[in-house]
Image 1: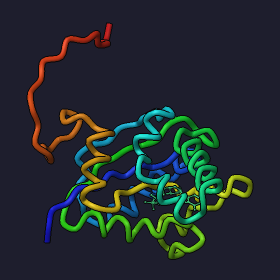
Image 2 (image 1 turned 180 degrees about the vertical axis):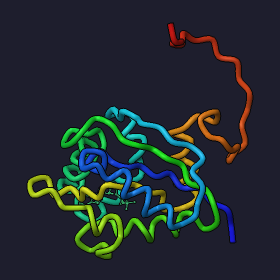
Image 3 (image 1 turned 30 degrees about the vertical axis):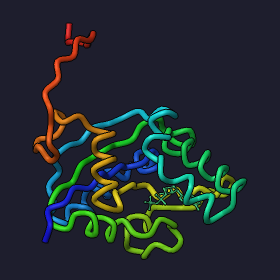
Length: 178
Ligand code: ADP
C-alpha cells in the first residue's frame, strides 16, 4: 500500500474546546507519523487559498446565493471569527494515511458523521450560520494533500523531504532572538 501524507488542521473550535489532546489521541490509533506541526493564524487571503476548490462545489450543491453565503461563513470560521484566531496544523505520513484519517475524522456534516468519529463526537452545526463546525480538516486525496501541505508548510518545517525541493537564495529581513 502507498505511503501517503495528509494535512490535518485542528480548527479554531477544536482549540477553543480544548480538544487537541482528544483529537491527537484519536489520530494516534492510525499509527501514522507526525512529520510537521505548528500553530498558525489564518487571514482571509490564506483561507481563500486553502479553500480554493470549495466555492464551485458549494454553488453546484446549494445554488449561487446560498453557496456563496456558506463559503463566506466557512472563511470566517477557519479565520477564527467565531472562536479563536489560530489553528493547529499537522502533517501525517504513512500507509494509506488519507483514508485512515478521514475514517477516524468522520463525514463533513457532523450530524451525519459516525457518533464515535471525531466530527461525530465533537462537531456541531452553528445555529445561525449553519456552518458545519467539525473541529478538524484532513486532506481528501493525494493531490489535495500535496497542494495543501505545500501551502501550509515550508520544506524545512517538515522532518522528511516528502516532495522534491529546489534551492533558492532569498534576501529578506527575518526576526532572530535578541
Ligand atoms: P471536508 O472538510 O470534509 O473535506 P469540504 O472540503 O467539502 O469538506 O468543506 C470544507 C469545510 O466547509 C467543511 O469541513 C465544513 O466546515 C464547511 N462546509 C462544507 N460544506 C458545508 C455546508 N453545506 N454547510 C456548512 N458548512 C459546510
